[in-house]
Image (cartoon, rainbow, N blue to C red; front, top):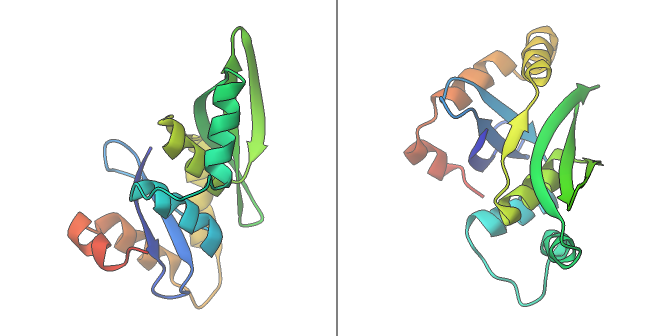
Length: 158
């Protein structure tokens, strides 16, 4: 997956990370907190801070420990909460570390690591959208997200 953009949901005013598959066929919106969105936006805009932010610190620690982020995977969706795993390697040792998707994505951006989403998450997210009974028309929002052009996305950037 790639990050199509980071935007504000025009309905809830919450930040959304918009992931899109490389073919542009599927979109996965992940609502995140303002601070998490800021950490991602800083990296997307190549903003250098005077002191390391948390995700910069994580990257620096991994480098000092001679560990690499192999990939991050948005691995689960339970009770409207997304889950992710950061896959690390150091020499012949590999580890999978539980993480919030926003933190995993912020770290992936800093380490230029690939972002994956389990097929079950995409399927469950669509099922969740279809079964939700709320004033938010999620199928309309999903269609709107999928149809956003890069120019339109710029109107909603953080």
